[in-house]
Length: 356
Image (cartoon, rainbow, N blue to C red; front, side, top):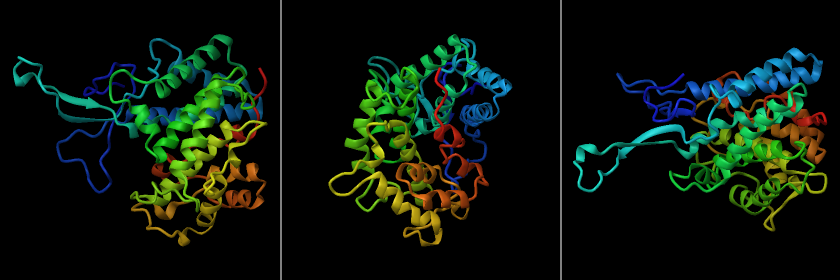
């Protein structure tokens, strides 16, 4: 589906910024275009679920169905998505000034994506994690998919000569948008490693991200007490904090190796992932004890079964984290909450993919 308002090419991702829940669309205005966002989110549910089903049952029909999706989105030239998010959450800004000597009527409105829109590509993360489990993929398919993710990694990490440098803005935002950038980049680098093996510490891209996590992410996002200062001031501080915790836990899982666990990294002032998990654990166990204002919506539907609890239980050998994870509701009742759960198939994160 192509939005008639899109300045992007047909194969480029495009979405429009939705209004806040308390600011409905004005009568007569077109509804924001979100078809690409919704399709990518659906893909991010389908491919990992099919990979998990194949891993559990060994039935090739699940892997074959996943392969159809992968070819359509990442390989087939007729349908392949451009590996970039230049037009995510697009908005129209003030008109560009006309060129010198031209009539002012030649001015055109600026249309560009927002760095916050990069979070809409988060479903790519678990798709990347699922691919090594799909052992029936042929070599050409596997190479094609990995090439797409390598290209998207370059878009996330390489300086852009033109445009708003959305990826860099997301990376440096100090909020859950920065965590989304870090998780997406980590998943792409993990998949591009020679065997998709997190134990390959020498991989340059993973090493760079590991260094960034320790030198920038922890310092910018986690307080010495363990909370996230840039999340608690948002309209949905509880939801955003849990969302951020899940993404950072997934980052720790992807960047840790047999020789070095970033789960255990700690700054001199005490800021650490261990502290962040411990601080939020008490408020996942008892939402009513949350010390900041309640979210403006969906607060009663939280916390849900957070993947950070399961991953941290394994990393820190804390059975109480796993016990709480098991006791929480597994299926978010609304799409708004489901979109803030970055891991939907824990099996793919707790089981090593087969060796090719």
